[in-house]
Length: 353
Image 1 (cartoon, helix red, strand yellow):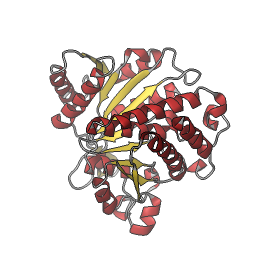
Image 2 (cartoon, rainbow, N blue to C red):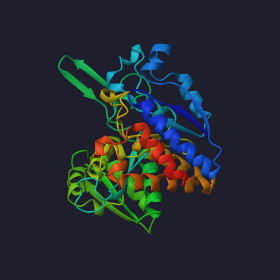
Image 3 (cartoon, rainbow, N blue to C red):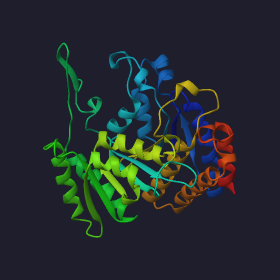
Image 4 (cartoon, rainbow, N blue to C red):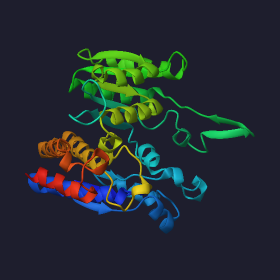
């Protein structure tokens, strides 16, 4: 498996290094034959190439089997015409990594949920309320007159259908329930189209249950009783917010793994941002990117029929659970003493056995 490694901005270098320590341990144990290529995105790339996401990096990604995508500080980037490109959006749209898969699982002694949480949020990632990915040319957000801004939301049957399909496929391997999140009482046409496509796909999965819920109520139920959810399927904006809420309730955004998956390529990417305020201080929790890398191995193993990759993913998950169960092997954000590097090495040792 050839991996393209892109550390990104802020804490990216530190959490990527810790993740590579874990991947190398998993490779040594399971004989995965991992190969690494390194490139640059973010401010480093901007200084060298004039773009935070050079086209050459995207093309290089297309030639690899997977991507390790570090966090980006796109809020601080210059305007697009001066090279400020949101790499997360560019990878999702230009490489068609349409399924942003975000699990959230509670662990003993961590988090604030009243009942156990074990769910997946299946987020459509190529359209929706995000104007930077809704137009073939030109911005999807504009100011027709001073003091008035119009932002475009794009919803297509194609994108809704395939994200629903991924949600039901995931549910079939779990507890067999998909919850479609919407606001069709107000977004009558766009969320109505989303629900129409989800219902179509649901008919092909008679062994799974379809639940429909308005986003307001979904947020409330995540706090009150997250155990009612198995796989949540939603459009881009709704799922982005709900996944952050679920991850924080289950412990921390720092514990939230995620992949951006297409039909033939996937990228591991932590749910959290670049945290420039703690960059270079060995304080960042690398768990999110480590778990994202495990998800990438599992995705690759399933696609290629390679059980060793799935076994490696399970070992990484188990190693992280073991470390988080003990306060003495947690990072400072969870009340523990381990820095970024030390946590990565501890996880690597746990994986190696």
